[in-house]
Length: 295
Image 1 (cartoon, rainbow, N blue to C red):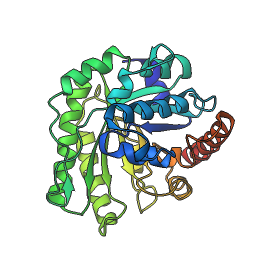
Image 2: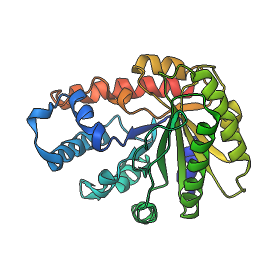
Image 3: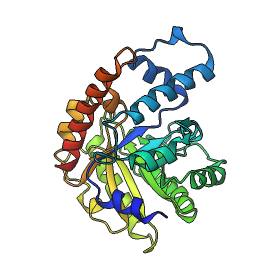
Image 4: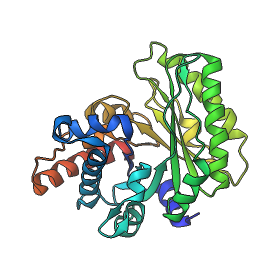
């Protein structure tokens, strides 16, 4: 493990950019960026356009390790190049931004009020690819819709089981059990989740480190024990459907939790903007999320 990256993740001031939309969420992300579905055909062209958008974002002067301390990539983005370097290598070598890789295969059907991760038969191959590209950690997502104890416990159990495989491969997993902001039982679900996460974090050995990516809790500072936990490198928050302003406001009420926003980060950026307009809009977005993350 790269100790400089570990230190940046533990104590760096800033937030993590989530640039890992994949498959089904790509057309939506491109549409928000001002590229309509009828202007491209086929997956190859779609992913080319997505990579061009991500490259523009990463290469922008406002995107660097002074405020963006890490970035989560989709596998195809990691395998592509920016200015002759692999994307992950470019992030660290040129921008001093710690690279992470999304490793899950999406969500299974809902059962017991939750959606577990689909099986990941490619996990060992992804660990090897991440290591080859100098990636520090990974991210994988499950979803909790209801305060069902069996469901919440199953989500956390699965996340930690896969997480331990990633740790054994030399990576730091970001465990993301997202509680839906639309859940009618959000508060109760978050209380169940906190207990399950603490139980599993307490069972980790001294050389097993994780990160957590959580929905911003309804009860401010609910996750403080996890923020302070010796095995938890950092707790980050997803924007989860809130607008950037709303997400920033809620995040700022939770001490020690930093942002890991995707849609909220790129809100207001379009393909039609000049580079100067794009950079200025991105700078404003980064600054607002940075300020909410360091409060």
